[in-house]
Length: 207
Image (cartoon, rainbow, N blue to C red; front, side):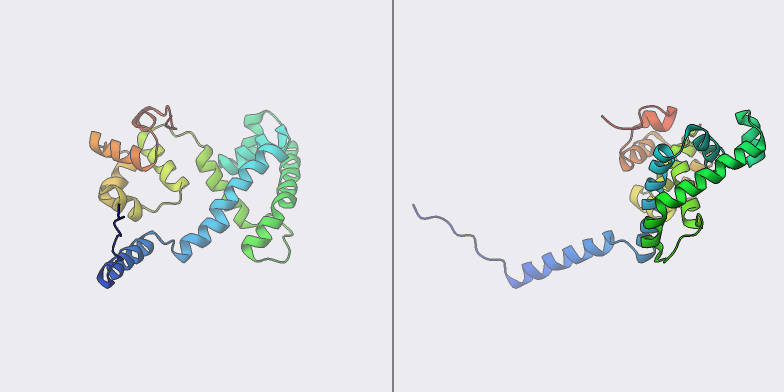
């Protein structure tokens, strides 16, 4: 039995396929500014989170979390932890030096630096982003903002992706408006989470 042979694509088909691919590539391409931010801050934030968990002692970590993650002053951190300020200062100094040594090679590469003599702003920014991921928000709007910022998604991109105006999204994030059931489903699908998490802070990950 003679096998049927599929005819090769014609010029127009190739041109159309190429155009579709290029359109897709352009729409999904990462802007240079987005790439630099991801490389310098988002990627580094994961390293910072691991370093804080694994390289610091319990006393050092608790002070760092109070100051960098919760935005407390050293005085307030010491007060809440039940220690004197000088102890908190010493713990912070040890923690900062450990983080500098642990992250200096990554920072040198990402920031194109020859030396890293002190904890750079880049690490502090990365800490802020890691803190945002670690923060347990208390409202739907705050949870939505945490998910969006944690993935470095600007409001304009989010708006286009879910088909909801930026104005309405801002109002939802600020708690001024409540999302409709359809919007809730769109948000949950976009972030691969559950409506239950957005509403109640439970079951963040889908099974």
